[in-house]
Image 1 (cartoon, rainbow, N blue to C red):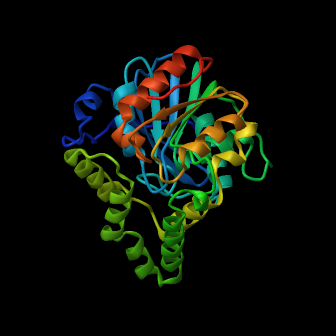
Image 2: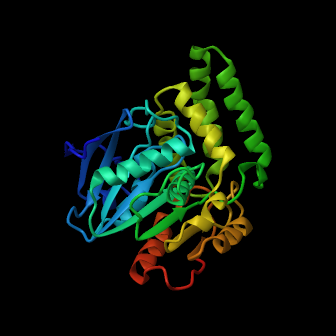
Length: 325
């Protein structure tokens, strides 16, 4: 493995984004690392010489674009590194690991090590990324590997705090399981087409968005249309989906000793807020911030609230009690 990188200007600037102006003020560089038989592409934002670096891990079927509204708000005074998970976005699949929790944990350890970071390091995971981050720090899915270099702090946004089938919309999870099962059972070409079906993607987007702002809803749907099907092949997305419904952060919380911030949504349909409150108690050192009037899309609908919670957490080192936004 090598830590060499190649930098180029990012071409991404979504003029229709409500966060475009803020993001346009944040310097960005594109780079890549060869890891575990694949090529991980990532985007580095902000001050390359900052004392604090945040490494961001996005959710299932997304890519680095999903966390850019948060990046736009955090921007100044920090270095933010946001990779596309292997097999998603512009990153190629792993060939030396499966795309399950154990594989993604090994990848995240290798990625952080390959960056050669100095100063204060914070790991941030959103949704499925929260499981990957927690499992990585707990030592992996089967407890057969160390967590490697430890970060100074952890931030989990919309953490998956209980099994997916136990959520308030467990019936939708069962439908999703059937959908992915059918995609696996069909011939390769038909299964791949089903996974990228725009109608199904739109139904999912409508179900998750809580905002009543019509322009923001339209933008969110456009983001899902553009990036929710940016995966390399059927094998990758099916492996990742099985991992996303078979595991949750509560499995790993007790083995994550770092100061941890949980940024949870009061109206999250995947993990209800009562489960997030229980999750807080499983961590040795965690604070919980609850954001009202939003569901599983904090990063799209309430990035300013999330950023405020993250900035306060970083400023205090995670020692102050959490609150409600």
